[in-house]
Image 1: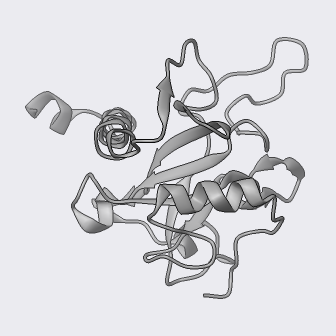
Image 2 (image 1 turned 45 degrees about the horizontal axis):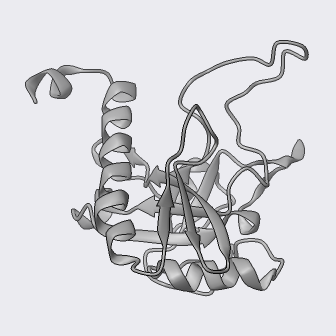
Length: 185
């Protein structure tokens, strides 16, 4: 634990991300009795593939972002985001470039996963607390609307965009309803 405490912010975020994935696996997937967890191989843009009688759902797990050892607020990511919401960073940790085009490979593209699960541990102190939203509702980058905005606002409590109920989020996603996260909370 001391080694982790002395490590860089990037290393600590990585460790916390691994713990968030384990918490999702232990807390969420074990309570989803009508779901089956498929094994995910390779470096896919999602962390979990869950299947029920209606089909598969791809879930990406991220940590609520921290800044200076406290929860980071959305406005600190981008001034246009709400001051009363937290933030999650929706890009890959590793840096890379596409071999042929030289494009940055850190950003996620819309369509690479279906549900975003955000560990709310930084604000609640509980590894079992998650908020969920439909990935297609996330905000796009202004310069390329096929890519997810780096910082996304996360509601502190359930709302019309965020829920703490995985099954409810899956129902939202399966409804096919199209919208973007609200910035007027």
